[in-house]
Length: 317
Length: 278
Image 1 (cartoon, rainbow over the protein chains, first blue to last red):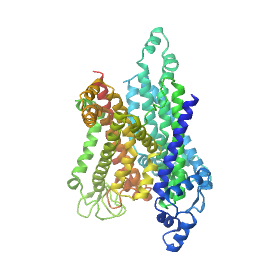
Image 2: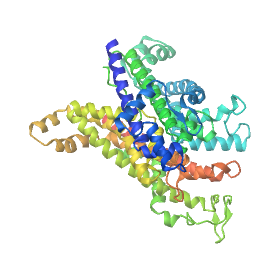
Image 3: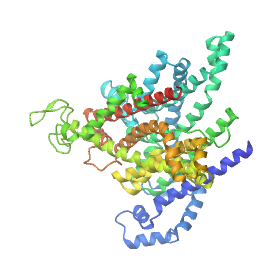
Image 4: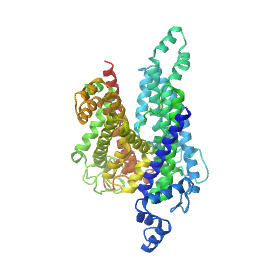
């Protein structure tokens, strides 16, 4: 087990190295371009040349990358040209806001999709199954920006009971969290619910369920003691792999509701060509995803020791 | 035919009808659209308001006075053409690399799998934003971004299928007969993997349409005058509290297209499963 974890961690480090190289290559391969982005359109050629020389941009690309990586690993993430602040000081409050949004959504998605998935999967083809399956296909088909529009139209424009923007300028407000969370939950619960349903439906056809039934065990006992345990292995890993999707959705939702989180920050950074900030945001988001993948792998092995290590589950990528 | 069997159930049939409807809009946009999608007429008309030529603006007009229904119909062409091209391109890359990895295994497999892992470590939208911001917003760059971001997932599916199929007797027989590797991959392995791939392609086309919509919504999609559903939402967003029709109709368009594709994919999956059980 320890060796497997070490091997997995080694792989993670390799992936992170490759990712950092890719990010650096995309954003800083052209040094002259970086100077324009940092100093602005109206800087003179001398200013740019001076800045390039001062910041070591005249060195070969690989050497620059090495130095940048060293700085990044030790927490020197550069400063944001737009916010005029050190990136490492700038990020935490935005990340916390996103953690609140994603965490709240997750806390609703998981129980909701499990209850619905189990209810649908216990009896395949029943009315409950068909209704739940149809609803989850339907809600998963509405992109986040569209459901944000529909929900705003209903709750802000028509009923007038919720705020249409979530800027939270006067401190934290639960009311401003309702619509963003609703949008994310609506888009994401369906997929997980269908996974739980499929897993549950499959387990219910297994011989040991029939045995339990013939022994005279009550339906509740069969579902909770026998079926659930075996049905939850696959969905739990799927849920972890759902986090990249959650993160993508969070960006759209945050921009839509002007919620001051990680997504808005990345979006602003891109609009302002804020190189250091884009790099940091990209790296942080990848780190989050890679960690969830590792946790998912570990859970999978823990819950099902028969699974050979490395044969990871496939997400909808 | 699993396709025809799938259409016997109501869900997939409805899905198929929606997809055909939008395909029809895309193909015959010039005939179906009541107005020129780029022509400025009277700004911010509500649905059913009279048009100067005696007709109606059935769904109203936008900020620049362009007919929303016409822009929606032409928008179907935009999204289907670009989402289609992107998906096809991602499939070509995914299938070729998946077959190579699944057939040859060894270092080819390890290298390609590593590349796929690296790409799949990004949240999809972050990857798109990085690529579009670096290369600029254009149709071709969207194709490039989607190919880069989706090919690894297709690669994984094809690779797994190829490994499974390559272990069967008829492939060993082909190898013993001395058939070329290319022939084995394309004639013996690929045709046996099409079932799951068609279902995935249906869904992926929908997700790509959603992504192009999301990029348009973020202002990173196709450049402005092009009628694009996501772009329409982005343009109308500022005034949505007063003129909800600016954003609601394009949102209905993209949601219905995705719903159609998911229902169809669902039906195809069920049908192929029922088929494989006899």
